[in-house]
Length: 375
Ligand SMILES: Cc1ncc(COP(=O)(O)O)c(C=O)c1O
Image (cartoon, rainbow, N blue to C red; front, side, top):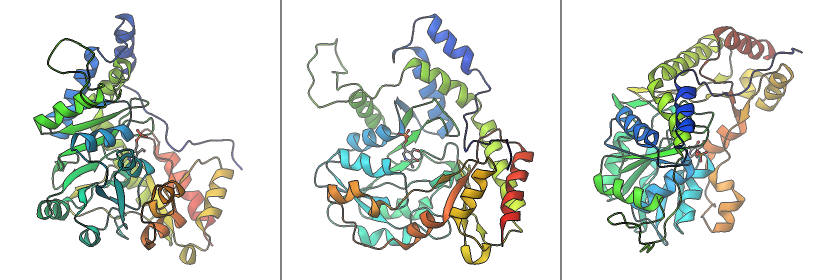
């Protein structure tokens, strides 16, 4: 047993974060009115290759705001992967709409594009592809299906800052895309999120709804024509976000390098399975996730997770299927189908430490523990 502790994912803040935050504080611009908000929005949107960025207070509300701006509401159905973080489903429920689940692809762990069309009904209004763990979804067929059935696309890119599909950044394939900047994300503001879009009208609508539906035209008359939200991001958070975005490519390289190292050091360990990257895409490896095949590894993932913990290595379990969520069952979602790939992933997988600044020695040590524990 070792004294050394390695956390699953600490934030990495090695740029202008402190300088910008101190500037925001010393000038008194700490609310959402400061200039860092606009600078962060513009810089991040440009990084994604889209026109507009709308900063909000977390990634969950970014999805809700996107769906709100697209007019999704009661009685509508929205297709989401069964293998995702609960926020994707909750954002749909906030609107009185119904999330409809599609199982994951067994290799890429993203939504299985071959199973989307069978879930489309006359009530379907949108698809939310989620770029799981930083691995871009196969967007060409998703865009094609959406066009054919006249559906909106909202990419949930919470985990995939800077990831590319066929040379284009994720976030640029949809009507509106959402990002999270939670502390463990490749780019963080502590808590935070953003909608990005190329469409001027959606930009206006997102800004309108995120700021209590104040009349955007005139002086504040305190008359509100629609139900709005306070989803604003503070200037302090945006100051961190701007500094992080300045280093986005550097952080992305670090995460991708660590991912390659994990794959290299574990390549000889039978029964350890990695996510397959889509053709012509860049997986930015938000989390280094492995699946343990108990037959071939000789132990199950729970045994390995406990063993790693005894050795000071922090890990996290994977999402449970949306179809198994008591909250969504109570809400009235159809949870009756089978989602075998999602169940397989949640039963057998977990995240390894994934911080951007993890050292090669740390990764090699973690992989040795995994290798030596195999039976
Ligand atoms: C796929 C996905 N969507 C949405 C979210 C929600 O983001 P936040 O925690 O910032 O609300 C997360 C958070 O990790 C996520 O992984």
